[in-house]
Length: 347
Length: 291
Image 1 (cartoon, rainbow over the protein chains, first blue to last red):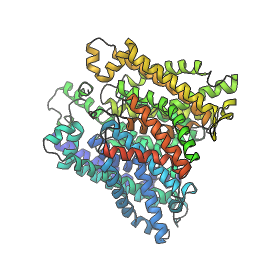
Image 2: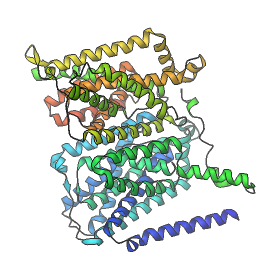
Image 3: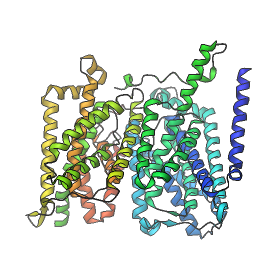
Image 4: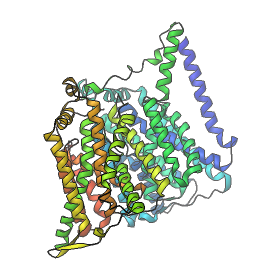
């Protein structure tokens, strides 16, 4: 009974958020606000996509900015080679950029996933720098440091941001849909088992290698598609601005802030951090002081709330309810045992 | 041919500097099981400290190490106590993020103070050179290499000839067992972090004389250093030194044979190639790390 009420309320809240997201450009049509909307939705999508790999399997990739940049270049090059004009047509090629990114991710994942934990993190960082170097050095293909131009979108004035806003919204919803489906599926259960103990998961018959690679590829393809739309939005891309370590670390931070491995966590993290980041860059961008502020937020989150907002709040609610009377056992709170002491098991 | 030989010699000399910087990183990993992504930023910080002493007080950059190394040691101990020690669960993953944040913070602060213009430390020995056979070697490379040899030698002596070194090695082998036999693991960790920072300062000086740098230089540095320690096997000091030499010789030869723009690329290609054959790195023990 209570559970059904809660489901109903949660569904209602989701519907409300969805409607707000849908009509947001009509509420605040000025271009600086919709610009913020485009970037916030972009990070909702990126964080959600990253969470499919990082949150569910526990494999921390710091190289997803590589896939972001690759998707961006893939779309830009496709449009240039095929001679596509600006307009709505470039959006149709975004899935193709996603497929290309997925193919790259199969190759990268194949060797990166031979390693675990710390080594995996480092390999993903190395991968990102490889891509950055390639984008800079393959001048004949990518234009190198001079950058790569996209066809210029024909929209003018305040309307300019609107198509991009909805493109990012579609991708974010796609990411959320995929994430939600994975979370409920047997596949997702396998991923969580890998996160908790990969060797035991293998022992009970989870095909860990195939599962990890699939999660990695799905996550990368989503990030690549978002990168493509981003490239079309900014119309000119440079190696160090699309394969940007800061983009890679931002999506990770958003997931950690909201709640690692939860469905809503990445969304919450992106909704909080991206507007803050844009505002800071706008206020202090020139002095690079915004990096200091960003780092401080980062440190505070990890030191004070290592599990993120959603799990912490959920625990708090469960404890509060238990103290209030304990009429029911708050089944939602039983996601995992409170962060088991993994350290002792390490050596 | 002479060019290749010259590149190889230069590669060994600069490889020594990278070996020094990577040694701190791999020691920190070995003792604490954390990846210090901020190591590159701390090298750049060390370079800026010496830069300030050199520019404002006209202190010789190598001499400035007498000041910067202890300062960085203390800073390292403080950073470890404040930011790394509180991580109790999931420390490998969380430490990457914490040290990444430290790198960003240091980059931001340095950018605020020094702007993002490139600077370089200069001294008489970064232009003066002496002949070896048919080519000339700049003095700074020799001095830098000797400095690194001395510090690496001191680290090895400390690790294998002192009681404290024994405590460090015991902690690297098995943290829990080390605690059981009465080693103050927290203290060992903090001091190791400090030692890592001190070596970063020393590496930073040589880096700052032989390269132009700005606050954003740490990205390139850390990607190289991480590649080196993975290649050598995480936590293996010997592996890191050999990997650093191999990598720098390979990049310097690539730079003259193919093109300087592909030099860094070779770095990562070697990493990929080695990981395909030996996922645990050249000198890595069995892979038992997991999140």
